Amino acid sequence: MNGKDYYIPAAALAIALAFKLPALRHNWREPLLRSVCALLTLAGAVFTFAAPPTIEAVNRWTGITNFSAPLVYCLISAFSASCLVLIVNWRGGPPEQTRRISRRWILGYAAVIAVLMTLFLLGDAPVERLRDFDTYYANTPYMGQMIGLYLLAHNVAAFVMVAMCWRWSLQVRGWLRTGLVIIVVGYVLNLSYDAAKMSAVIGRWAGLGPRLDDLSTFVAPPLAAAGALISAIGFVLPLLCQRLSDSWQHWSTYRRLGPLWHEVRIAAPETPVGVQMSWWSAADIRVIQRESDIHDGFLHLGPYFDQDHRDTVLARALASGADEETARAVADAAMVAAAVRARAADPEGRVIGASDEGAPPADGPRDLVRISHALRNSRVVAECRRQASLSGG
Image 1 (cartoon, rainbow, N blue to C red):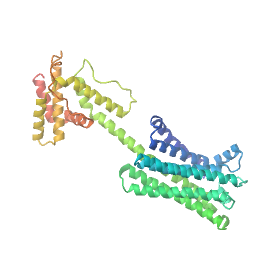
Image 2: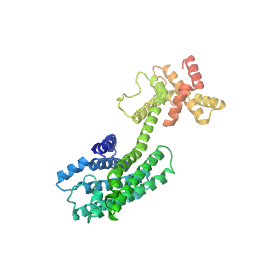
Image 3: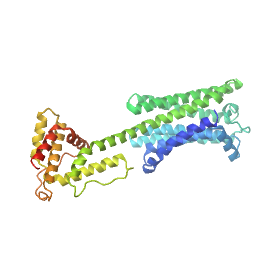
Image 4: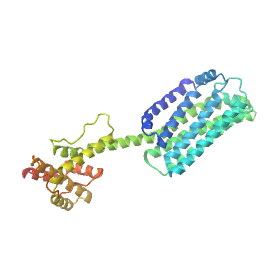
């Protein structure tokens, strides 16, 4: 693999991180979001600093031959910890238990990183190796132990991730299950990377010489790159798809509330209901504003609500075979439609100020959507609206 093979996935991860940073800025206390951003950052850092051109540049900048080796090993260990912490926070559970398990993984891999740096400082690696450091120094005092420790730490994380994600994937459905299966595939590739690296290193320890070095130099790096990228996709995909799904639901609710919103808006042309919102306003904010406008309209129409009329329509809808929720929505919609006509027939607002014997329609987004649907589609509501128009309100 050349530098481009490392930098392209690093750039892809940086783009994914850039999309997450605005959310992190507004919800930086959210452990799951922090874990996702940490994972993307560390995955990108591993690709960047493991590239041969970067290895050579870091060695030159620091003035320490092969300093890039422990740096990359530490980044890989930190990435392994970030994956374990993310899966713990993602799965959830009692907050104290989640924090305790996350803290243990972080402290454990922090200890591994400290030992890696200590072993490098104790050892001696005078010859710069950009691609085959693992096998070249496998039999060198302290360096060999450092190489074995980072491979063991990475292997433990890979086994734990495969076990946890596979077991969890059997208990869930949808995008979450898809993401977990993708993570398992990515970590199976990571295990293959470990197997290739360990085979070459153990071959050196066993006195086989450079016979298996190609497994470490040429086979393992593509497996690591593919595994890290696939795992990152598995982590991000369910969260992204869930966000898109939530956004779709909000926009759908906003659109479905349209008929009811327009109905109550027409009821008070001299004091228009609604607040102008910028085009970039989020869908959930638009839904909240539209619901608020509708409730403001209900307050304006309150004196014109006729509970007897609503009860009559409710009985008619139930008699026609509608279920109770649909019948209530139809009755509420008919009462709103009649109140709008009654308000239009009372331009001076003489009824306002009189005792309000009516009751506003049922509250809550779900009921509002049903009422809005009934306003547009119910034949009973259409007939009530026609009768109110003929009677002049």
